[in-house]
Length: 63
Image 1: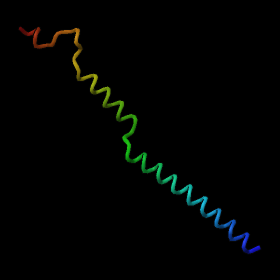
Image 2: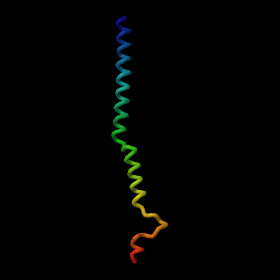
Image 3: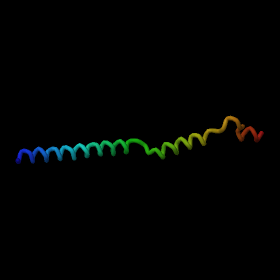
Image 4: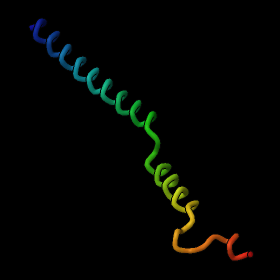
């Protein structure tokens, strides 16, 4: 009976350890990758800095 209890407890400990390891891997991956909001902000800034090709620049109007 004691042998079965030890196997049961070993299974519980290994299961909890496996869950803990997966959580740490997920947390590490989230910390390494940039937030999705910041990438959208960067894309928006890049598109806003480009001048539209159909309209002339402001310098050509000054002449």
